[in-house]
Image (tube, rainbow, N blue to C red; front, side, top):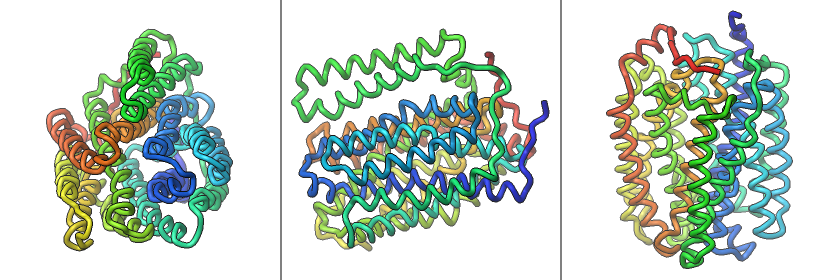
Length: 465
């Protein structure tokens, strides 16, 4: 049956609704990093608990985002998206009311669970609402508009933290969620996979338990001097992830269609996603703590310090997306990570007492230029590599890779002890980002994809049931 795409007027409201939904997750991630020093002071917690506050969210998000993507394909992308919005709002209120670290970490895990329904839905909805010829531009616009949240997040978060408790960083999610729901409910056309499918509960369990074991081992290993329990759980987590891949290869209706990885561009873009988003998550986590605890920046000053990156993303992502459609994504996906890596490498040498203009800004600008060159071409490459029927799964896989990368890299930051977390993060994340640029150069098929994006004749791989 020929797909029905939304009218141009309706497409505007769909884009706005998906931007608002994405903005909730962007605001949450950015502002929580900014609030970590105040949370640590108020709840009297150590570095490993701060890692868990971030990684508790990333754990359930990355483990279940694959399930969330396939649930959208099976049950209806609109229904799952709206459910994710409501659940994210409720769990945000629970985070704001947390009396201690254990409650907050638990609420963050719940928040990640609903985020797993919300996050993959945005791109899948765009992919099924816009005709192929318009998708590259729409994804570029989504990236650019979503970047407004990246600009506002540190400003809003820093301002809130200057005058109010850290608890208010979770309450500010609520008006965004209400506005998004009001737009999404009447405008988004519900769609789902035409072929009957089943929910892969076993696959989700293997993935979730595997990532949990891996995360516990990496965070608690250094904190517990690599005692027996963290080591056992680390090994068990790795084994369960291997079982997950074996299960997905054998089960009749997998959560992850491994046949998607027959596409060279899909493989390359996901390898790049792991490298770059792992570097991004790990470095921003450590930088926000370092600026406030060692450089003695206020919350709002720390927030303002990364605004140049946000402005670059907001201003140029749409233009870069269009250029990637014209010339192919490989040049941008190669140069971007290398430039971002040079920015992180420069910030490795940041010392207390250094001025913002000479000590912080040059590295931030290089990092921002690199991210701007990368983000839109990477997103477009992922979505152009699969069929419409697999858009939810593809978006889920890519988002899971991004979140799992952040989860693992943040968990690794205490490897040399909390006293060395910043220098370890700056050097490790710079190397990781640079490796992503090298991988893109050798893997991404630039000319063929550029031709498909220009003509709209995207011929994704064919997958079996």
